Amino acid sequence: MESVGHPTPYAERVLDVVERIPVGRVMSYGDIAEYLGEGGPRQVGRVMSTWGGGVPWWRVVHADGTPAPGHEARCVARWREEGTPLRGERADMRFARWDGLPEIMT
Image 1: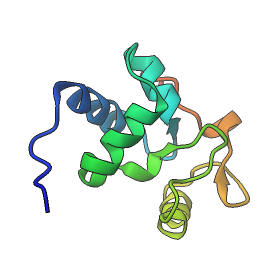
Image 2: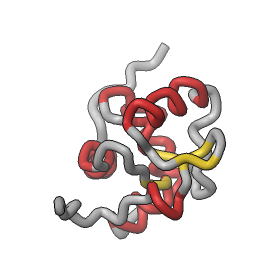
Image 3: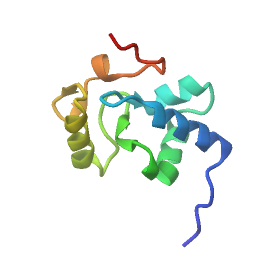
Image 4: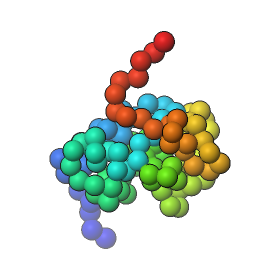
């Protein structure tokens, strides 16, 4: 089996964004690429599948709010713990999507 090695500079930027997604919020793979201004959803997905285990991976979803395939049950459980707005078994993107701006506490 081939060793994965250290994350690339692009992967580090992706992982940094994922670490900053607030509790109870999500970003799609495409949102992250757009926020960074580089790559696309597939590149972000590749980073997450290779190096995403150490960050809150459950906060990164498909554009329709569905979790990564194979991780649905664990993802939905985390969302419920965090109070993420849901529509059935997916994140409610209208209310749960984070735009990358600092959260303002009122």
